[in-house]
Image (cartoon, rainbow over all chains, first blue to last red; front, side, top):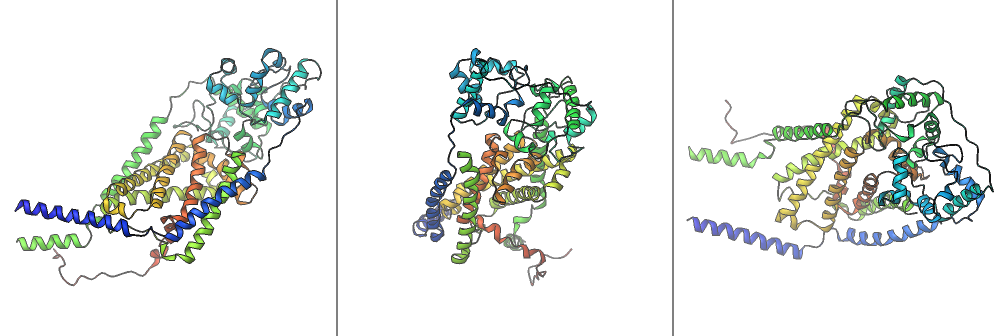
Length: 317
Length: 226
């Protein structure tokens, strides 16, 4: 009896498998029209992309000293560097062409991020010395790099005079106000985002600040009032620059933030809230799924199944 | 250059594809505007995959859309750190629910013979793309906190600049690679949309909410009232 039953089941399964195979062979691909269209469109797509490429030709400019001088300001080098005015966030660039190899310097200007990732000795040394603030990749072209180096060389040989830079003095700042700005409980007057969206710092909120940008607890950007004010009034890193271009901070806001951040840098660092966040969100997800299980436990019972069960039960009694 | 192609040309191509092919398909292949339900072939695992997936993803997409449409109100909402934390935790939990759901759906589709046989290559591409996007989204929100806040100042201005045909890609091109992948993968899904069963998002049975009530009458076999 058992053998017969099993073979019947096997037959049934084999039959279904064969049927499925046959179906697969015969069934036309779903939506033939649509899939034809798909291939045509995906062939056109690269064409459109090439056109888009052609529409944005790269600019090749002559490498010269005056272009370099202009780039030094327009590319925002001044946010972190002076020439002969002392260190800010980054080193003073006076004499940079005499203390470095030209090949090294031009690669450093072109792809500092790669050199840091590769662990270049000089790059790593600079990174450590300047409070672990990495030199950002400014997306310079080869000719822009050459122009900048030409400018630095002319400065070092005395052919050009360096721009004068002076220390910035901010008005007296209030750390509590700075903290409110940082956390977003007080909004910036020009409508800029709260720092906390992307940055964390010691001693705020249960789950800390954001992690898109660097932690500012011991940031090299906060080494001095001048360095901070110079950077924050015209940030050079690309995302900061895009975000703050239309919504600059007032001097008072800069002062308040500096007061808060320079105080935070000596505060005790809180442990990372990563585990807490994982447990909170994971726990909530489990509760939601368990709730669905309980709420809809009869959902799949359907109409037929209980009727069949009832019929069986009746017959049994 | 590459950034311009990826963050300007590609989004436009994706949206144009979605609209042009979507409209074409609507007029020339209208009966294909469907989710091609396989519930008839397998219903139990479908339920445990489909329900978490849809509740999760619809919540998450609504949040993305609301923040994009009302950045001012959303910014005010996330201004308080406690509200920000609550929103973030709810968002991450819903993302996990969605990932569990689509994971189960992917498993079901690849392990059930009956369902596999009615699955086209476009279905595989779509379900894999959605799975990847859900994982990328959770990754972004978990590692690069607090996305519900910085989203307003990076992705929103970029998308808005595309919308008014004055592309400004500097808002997004320097973001971490995973964040950029999440942006681009979103447009990949938009590009896949008109060629797949994803078109069923446009057939959402909204009228269900105000349809007349239906009275079900059992003539016989009704369980005895106690």
